[in-house]
Length: 482
Image (cartoon, rainbow, N blue to C red; front, side, top):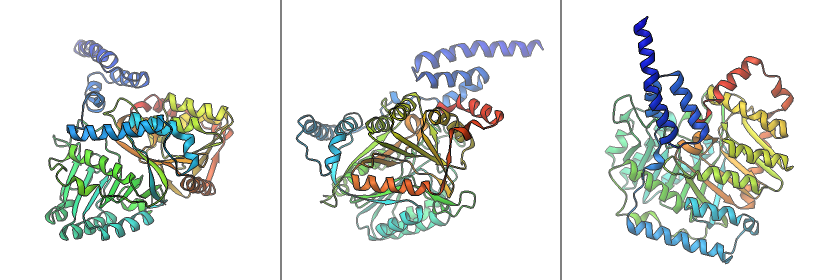
């Protein structure tokens, strides 16, 4: 008994300096700090091991190392465009885009997201249509194919994609495939053998150096990009797996949002792929860089910014863009997300929009794929429903779309959910669209989805059981690190 007491005393004493490290050395968000302090309090010693794995602060590390020439070129492009906005000399293809010049400028300044206006944007709302188009583009590729996915599965779709890529590699097309080591942890390493033997290259983002233990498990590359010949780019929420084709009985129809873009915005997507690839692979891209950025031509008139964020950055660019979009609303804010765990700043922005008389609607899946995250999401809805926000639960299948559309004039589609993990912990990338035609289509898609959704009213929300509320409250305490 005395030994047990001494052991507990030692753990308590050891925990004090560990807690001080968390509070003062990391200088985190207060909510995140409290969440980690709870872990240390209830899991002495073990909690610190968990902290070492899940709590590393990458914002202090310069992960992406660009050579001097690249840095200077990027700085010049950014400054030239900033000058155009400061001088009000830029001419907008869509006059409505002028109303969001401050949003464009913010993304340009903090996220180094160049604004391009010669883009054509196609929208896909399910994996079947998206992959049909992608396979066609892969078949026509002549120079290179760059793919980056969070989840790649060893199933029918995964093997079809592998076959298509292997054929192109055998034809001399340069194929590079980047996957996230955590998101695709179930994927056998021999999966890519045929592609490698054909000359393709494969890299894993933040791979584990110790079997069965990845100390960077908390930082995942959640981006999904496909670039074909530097002229066609895909971006959105759809990964590689049969469930994204609606072939998983548990989820049924898989409702998602994905874009196919042609135009100069593809160069921005290519640049993000290159930086992630060079971080993950020793076979750096560099010598053939000019072939990766061919002239795009005037393929359309849509304004696009490719905005990225990640745990290596001190600013949360995508979250800030969401807040700026919400604050700019004159009439409507429509949001689709599978997970809803906003931080205080985003929650306040939504409340202000609702209290200002804006029509704010959010759509979530009616059934969860991650129970704890779903419980946390529910815990935040009440505050907004009480103020008058409308919430819809998608019932046709599983809703995985990450989309925001404001006033039918601007929109965002990409990989970032409306949750703290996407804002702070994941590497994410979104396309922000300044085009009333495209934004109008996305708004109509949202309204069509409402027809197969059930509205969750504040009265119905209040009828949840005491046990349900208790579970939500417990999980919400950990929401900053879910």
